[in-house]
Length: 622
Image 1 (cartoon, helix red, strand yellow):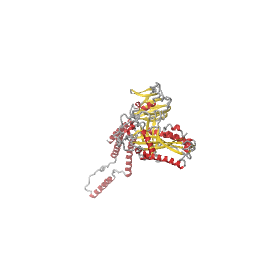
Image 2 (cartoon, one colour):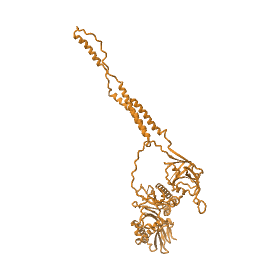
Image 3 (cartoon, rainbow, N blue to C red):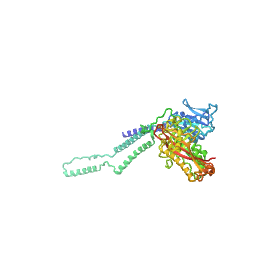
Image 4 (cartoon, helix red, strand yellow):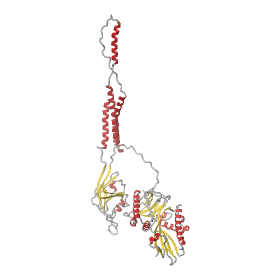
């Protein structure tokens, strides 16, 4: 019967294991679903609407084939359409469940009836800050993405050649086989049971065929007893027969017990029969992945408390994402590093604007002559501590970034604002300053939500309007303790204003020490620059405001016989090209300041967050 159970177990194990293996082999369906996108008329740009990529659930895999360079980027559909608004492109949309391509012509201006003046032939999409992410490959491009609603993909080459038209989108299919693991496990268990039954059956059979105890054998033939014979001879005749019977009993074989070596060999053979079963089961389990077992439930992550932020109705998307801002900042830092090394102001102008660009231009002019002058400090890009993008779907767009270095504690954090003028432009830094590591930043909206740009109308809710903030600080510098705005600023701001006042006194005292106080005079002026302030709202109804000021110092002779000599002022000599001025000299400095401005009615003061000063110009008065 044990043999029968063993055979039944072997057959059942074969069926179970075979069924499990078949699910992962011959019964396994395709792993992906593919759709080929057709393009009827080739154009330099191809816009694939996000609905086409979201036609089926799961992660989308985009395969683009063509000769030469292939470029693909994804971003917000509205941003992509704005970038393509002045160009002819092919749009692939989902129409009645099937992708359909149409050619879109440039937008027509309502004023002159002609195509927009921004139309460019051969504009290369590579390198634009507008994309959330982009990819470039040769001849074939494969990328995985999972675009949410409102996103689309742009495909092109270099903006002049026709975009690739061999495009395939695929989605993964569910190929999990949760019964494979249980079937193979059950088959392994049944196989092990069958092996055990087989071993027990063999053992039982061997015991049944072993040696058995023999009987006493046939009795010898008896004869009549003669009563006349003496008893002694009778006993002698019987004793040999008893001895023969005893001897025969002694020679009777008995069942022999296996010795120690035989028992060890028998145990080894049994283990060798069990090992193949365990080995087969182990190999089968090793080939089973997590999708070969039923998922009875996954542990859900423990939620952590976060600050509650209520999203306003009709909230616009943030200008950039965190990954996008990090990439833009790295590109800006790389471009400025190259421009600073080569002293290429045209290259720097692709990433700087306003006071920041003017300061760079002066620095390049000075370093061209003063070889020992240090290069401008690089922008740290290792970590973005604060990202505050403007929430808008129009242009221009503004983003505030606070970045710091992780590897060098001596490098101060840098706070900057960058602005994108239109869809075809890259972000340019307009204000930039260094901040103390201990400076506390006000509460800001999360990067995924963004914030609003403070307009002139909204500025009425601030303790100081952004338009008057620079003038108020200038008044504190000029008027000192008599300024009506002095109490509105925190001690750090007052200390900066007092240091500027002390530097003015030092210049006047220097003229006196050199004996020029009677033949020359110094005049000072500080005022807001022509650059408009940048103000972004904070969560406490306040704002972070970046302003630029121009601080000028003018020294003129008081007599016609006197001249202003530059002496050891190498910067003045380099920028003016002379060593003295008969009518005077004017030195201009640029100040870039970041303030935290509280809301109107708040008891807090306007706090200084960061400051940076550069020399802008030295000119001879004519």
